[in-house]
Length: 355
Ligand SMILES: *Cc1c(COP(=O)(O)O)cnc(C)c1O
Image 1 (cartoon, helix red, strand yellow):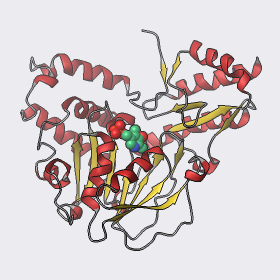
Image 2 (cartoon, protein in one colour; image 1 turned 90 degrees about the vertical axis):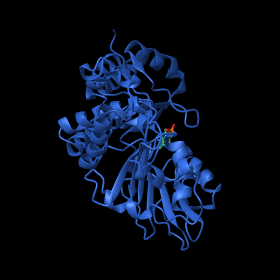
Image 3 (cartoon, helix red, strand yellow; image 1 turned 120 degrees about the vertical axis):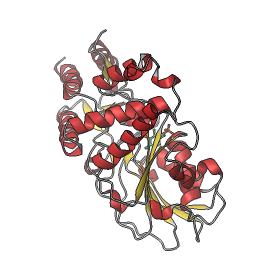
């Protein structure tokens, strides 16, 4: 099999050992003679997987007592609605920092329940920066933000200061660095950006929010339903959870998030240094707000496009075409991407310059 350097924004690259072990589990799970995906989700084997996955999330993120870890379905996109249902209380208002397409989609869902209020936005400059120095109005039930803007390539470097409950969509940077979970009421993330295959959505929920909504919540959207049943109210996405558990074991084996962060910093710094050095390229967002997961950049001379596209194609690079709303290129460097692959991309950029 030829080595492909996969810079896809999601579904994304996972560690080679995760692919190997997950493949084996499909054929014969732990010598049970059964595939992982044909056994009961209530079997002792799968219950143990779910337990380990939830415990590893707590251990790796140092989740304090008083939080429940859930693996649900529907992606972060259903999460947008689940947030509104579970967090809207007396005011029926949620505040949103709109820094990109996903943040705006989250805001839209809030309006199905109550009112989504834009607290700060970077929509005026095509989401090329993270808003700062805004004031948060009173009368909100919660504040929602998107920690990493997968499409536009910006990332919050600080957790927003607020006195209202804080909710964060961390789909594309969860497990990329340590975070202070105690600052949040809900953290949620689709698995397929930095954790596992699509199918599962991770929720980390402060127990005090459960059962506090002022409206009747449909059963499947009610986080309390799932918390009471340990994520087993209905059939969970067993394969996605299993592969996520393998990824969590892999993160732990590498030394946890402090080590992962060092690796991610080295990769991002390598690529951004070349974007800034090479006169043929420029970044598309404010430097201080650059994402360490998804780097967005464009050519300064569009006539070089065919030459550059040939260079990276020939180097077996895949998935770096920019999102249509930004254009140019987007290199996603999730946890499992080795720095060697980033070096291959940097070499292609250097070769274009020397031609
Ligand atoms: C990909 C992505 C989503 C959407 O996730 P789904 O699981 O496909 O619903 C939401 N938010 C962010 C930040 C994303 O990167």
